[in-house]
Length: 130
Image 1 (cartoon, rainbow, N blue to C red):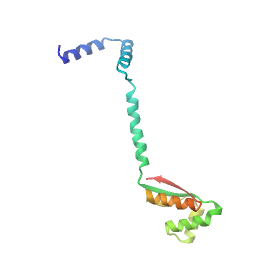
Image 2: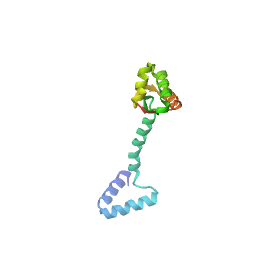
Image 3: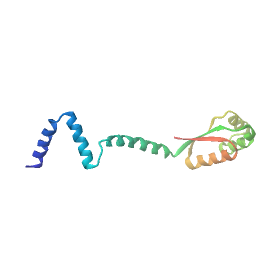
């Protein structure tokens, strides 16, 4: 008996089974082979994990000044002037009007450096991957 004939015979036999018998067959095959029929669920979750990893790998960031406490305002203004090159008046307005964007698009290293400088000055900065 050829492989094609065996497959055809198996298809005919399986076609004659009831739904209850097919369920029993599924369970028996899972036990015998040590597998489960739930594999498609795991496959569906994989693209979501890949998307999450892609988001974490952003190369450019939007740097936003979230807040600067009143007692640290002078340090925050100096930090903003250093980062943006704004004048004293503009930097003061930016700090007082927080949350405001400090840098539209900064490479990861630069964005993290800005965040360190802001935290040292007492300000709070957020980074958002682009």
